[in-house]
Image (tube, rainbow, N blue to C red; front, side, top):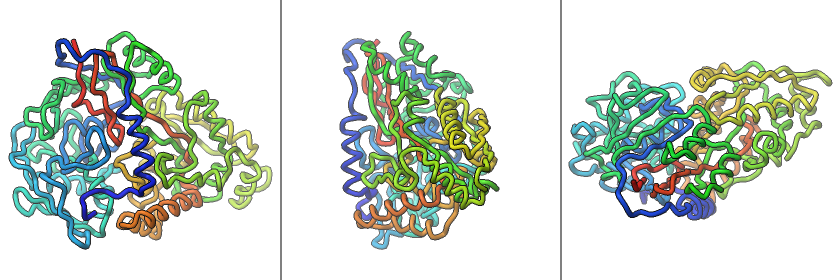
Length: 530
């Protein structure tokens, strides 16, 4: 941490940089850049806006909006993977023992309403996230290793750490560390969705948020990052990917991003009237087990489910073979990835192992276990129920399970999983920050596991995560990541299923489409010729 950069293993860095060198910056020609410049771009999405408050937002779409409207001390650039200063004047001074990080702010910083942005605002923002500690939020990303934050003077912010954390700078680039305006944001409550009080490229007036329909972002005259290339971004929400695809083809939207079915992506990539940017790192998809559930606190029952899954069959049933199957909770683009679930449970359904694990779980020979498999109806795309149905059939075809499939709309689903109401359910995960740690601490760390609905806790694993976070030797850190993958398979807390890739589709009149290293669409770079 002493050089102000997060640490990746050499293998991880090579693997993921190679992916993005040929992916995020890759796009089909975007047409002429001559002619009159348009002042507004319409972005269509099938996602939903759950919260615009950094203290609550822990989903991809709201994170993308906050990326464009809030500054942080450090940020990832629109291209490349090296952190850079944002509100900070430079990367921090880090004490020799790694327990103190000192930032100096840039001169003359202001929020969108003209209020001064100083060290007290930074402290207010971090303390507010910690004090609110909203259920299912990303507050744990800060509190796991941070002891306190201090405003030493108007321009100096000091973080005091519980232990050295090589990932902490990356976490400060995430939306949870956004700097909010203390004059606007309530100190003891979550702000409503009409409130954005930041200092980045865009601002949002409360009248321009229409729940479930649209969000209009307008250029912030006090932007820390500079002037965006297009002054207004209108985000329109669509109920289905098929409706968004039609709107794109009919030129009702300029940009379509997040989320299409794999088959729709193939069709859109082949449409010569459109431009394509990608792939960027998309979601990993997986099964979650709630270890507090009376059924699934039984580790061997969890393992029996894991042994029943055939990813190739799931891929064929739900996606016509178009997704990349996965055998680890770590994304395969990182060099530390190992196929631990294939090694432990096999590549296809293994009925002998299912029987073996059920016997160890105390289920008699020939007995069937009744379970309820949950999925969301409106968050992961139109193929979600196909995936759920494939898994239901696979489990029942072992002859050892009777499976009921149940669904909820996303808002209720998200609340119920965080309240521990599901025993087994489907979930997805986008990267928060560019480090393998982001595929471990939010899943098997005590605080992170709460946000996933697994509620797992093991002090020994918490200690191992702390070890990898403070480890400065890349080889030793890689070894810990491989150990953690093996532990995740041994505990069978999650079952990895497949990986997705993100693409942006635009009209030929649109230029500058970029997915950053965490797959956010950087709308500040978008242009359009009228």
